[in-house]
Image 1 (cartoon, one colour):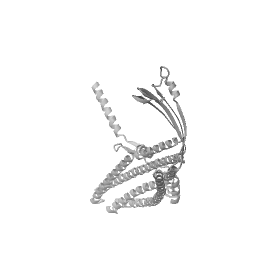
Image 2 (tube, one colour):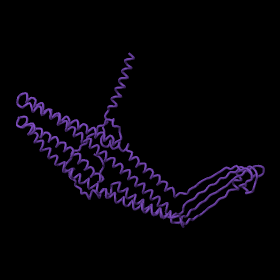
Image 3 (tube, helix red, strand yellow):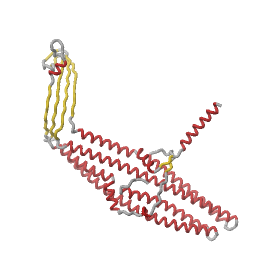
Image 4 (cartoon, one colour):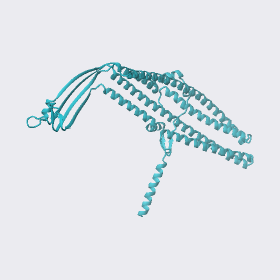
Length: 446
């Protein structure tokens, strides 16, 4: 009895393990985006660069604070040496201790610290927009891959419907052939049509599997993980199909909300501050400092015992300092730094112009593509409606023997292709319209 119970438990555990491996994860578009953002290495690099910029900013701010240091040391001297407490020559082993501290602060250095802080802060802001840009790129990629899965899912359903329709027609034809109403060749031709539709179904399933694989790879999850996606409501209304905004308006909005533009402008500002930092190298710098120092030697005695505390107190020295440094000639290092910083500024200015040109061209392409996709979708809808009527008419004539198989096959294939084209046009328009919405600053979602 115990043996049977053990076998039962083992079977249940193994069965549960297999069932767990076969579980299918259902994901909506937001979950796919979140997984991709969590796993994407490019985004992580951008985030690490942002953290590095934050460290630079905090360090630059700390440059306004004074620096302070403590020092101490122990020495053991042999033979003839100088007693550090009396400066007398002695010839014996002595133990010495010294202790000191100093502090200093920059009072003025040509606004180097001020401009360095501003430059670091600007670079930090730019890195924030770089992270946002990376996030947007990943999100757009996921939406595109997600829509590709939905697109191939609908193509698969269309292929299933086409196959089922051909099978039903084959069954009807078999009955008509058996009754002598149609020749045997009609049945054989439909058998061939069913076989072709089965091939189309296999191809559609393969395309869907490939689309799912691409989506999983873009999320950086294992290909072995079974995933299905939620199908959102993607019915397109006439209002949605109409682009009621001009390309110039889209571009104007994009200049205000796209992170790559904000980042490029901030990097240009950072480069300008870099020029000012470099130019501060030709300005005088003023510093202030303070410090103390004391020491102890066992060669110096008070009475019969060495008084450590008294020595430290008696040997204590203090100082205050005020210094000015005026650069005269530094082997062209400051001049070279200024020239390099000006080149960096020019490069940043060119990059800002290039980002704007790229954005305008991208928006113009996206807008024209969306406009063309809208027209293609509308035409595809009209084509499907017309071919559905044509197919119904030809099918009725074929069942009555008034139309041959070639006419039936042509009408059936035309309708199948038109429906596939409509599906393709719909998803093509949805994504391209989503791009236009994105450049207007609308949320990236379905």
